[in-house]
Image (cartoon, rainbow, N blue to C red; front, side):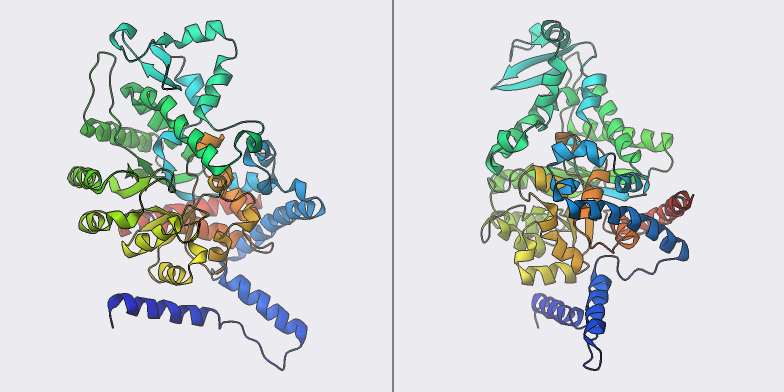
Length: 501
């Protein structure tokens, strides 16, 4: 039997076993059979197989009390259910939620799907970076761009103007600037009537701050703040997706890619020294999915060379960009198969509502042994692929707020990933591009997933599994994972004690 067919057979067998766990006996009465079905469902759900300690059971009652209180209020008036409201409008109320306050305290392990240039809050960037000396702004091709310049006359690409002059002319400049750096609006459904409209706007916000962040001193400050925002949300490790950024100085020096990595790694190490509980970061390189196979091969060859120089820091490769507009992964399969001998893959795939076209990228993600799959929104439509993902132990990176804001799924109660959680697929909760929607850290996404995508009686066990799986399915090596799980376990005990107090 061919290896692939053998894997498929074992996956189907596992599925058959999974659905035979319910114990129904004709001698049992109706209500007993009903309870057996419900108990079997909860056992299959993510975290259902974990054995909880006495302390965890007590804390679980506290968590479920708050969860049920919010759900009861929502059942009485569904407009009170915060995860179903658009995040831009619900966020202030989410921050007042007792469930959210618990999740903020909870040690969440790792953040595994965050895009580098949308990971620091816009408020921080405006207040701490755009008030520095030598920063200028200008419109280029309809996009407002920010850049540091020693002498604005030396850059003829635009008629640059100092930001302090913009502020002198417009007292509301900072509010306007924030809108250039994020998607936040008061009336999102009016401003973004379709997924294509919001993606066109989404792509532009990355351009506004890009050159500003490439300024070498600011890049260090940016990376440090990125790690700080995760750390303050009880995240101990992260993997960041990005492209090679050409760092520069005011004197006109533009540094090579090695300097980008050197500064990046140095900043991570500085943060670890300042925050000993933080374990570190890795980088996943991204290339736009609309390139030609020839351009992809050149980019992968460069990445492989750099990975040999930074083997502990570069985790692997992913595509980036609006999946509907890019080339299907199958067009790159020969190039990717060759590169797979040197690189691990972490593909975005199936981030679509279409059936039978863009979603087929999921097949290639599985065949190319992607270590994790970003979003996999369309996976539940493909039963064979679902079984293969489970058999190959590929984790799904779930970003519920991103899926809502970018208009894949309006209400997380109907999110297709619920069926994956119900079958105990490995799922890691991720934040994607938090600064684009005014979030930071992981707690907002954890809150939405916990309240809207898990059964009413499921509590601490699924939260514990989310955290542990974020470590288990990271790009850390086995020894690093063991160390991380040990440190996380200590933080977990502190969290339990804090809850009991």
